[in-house]
Length: 303
Picture 1: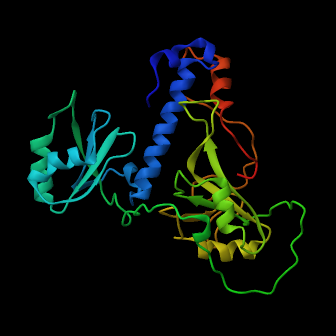
Picture 2: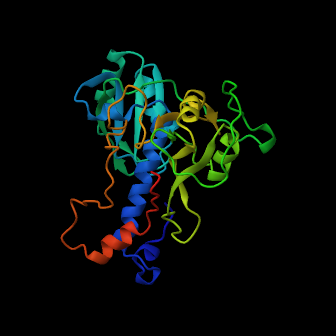
Picture 3: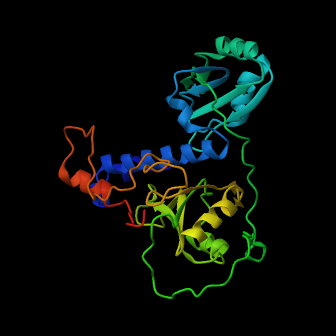
């Protein structure tokens, strides 16, 4: 991440080295997840024990490895489909067109040296890919902002004061581009009927904790009326913003029709607790370490 060791270990920077490393690791994990989802990878498939005969996971690759280098390793053994290397370069994914070629490549490439590392291979989970990858396009200027069209309805008076949003009025937006800002999200969707707010969830920059916050790749769009949220849900689903096809769900306080009381991410919509249980904490961690770790997290009750 281009951070000097002295910057991590310097006690005068405020946070302990453990906190800085934890924040950096969280940043890399979220960045990798967002990248894989944008390329049509179904993250839930990693929990399955079923293995694919055509997909290979490449681990322990050196930092800076490019997709071209990965392709050069595997292409001599067969016809490739997708070759994915997330921005952090912690792992890679290769998909072959034929199972026999994937098996031959697995045997030939396993434990080969790449740079200063020995690479490890593992068969990828079955049904790893859920869709075609999203092609990244250049940002549109403000004069070319896309417009989401929804069916006409009778105009209603919108109250100016901030209203308390009821169940089913907040949409959870996934697969946001990291370049999409809160202002940009608001500008694109603020024309929708009974629009209330748009928010991009952010986190501290591990390279500069006092600098601008970074997008986490998801956000929320709130409405003042349930019906408006339902109509917007259908219109925004699959909408391409800054090169990313948006995935939309109803936020935890309001679920889609036909779903249970738990939202799509498994969180109980009736939960109102403000406490978290933190597990697997190292024995040497102190209360100050835990406070420092969580004071960087921005949380809004609307979530």
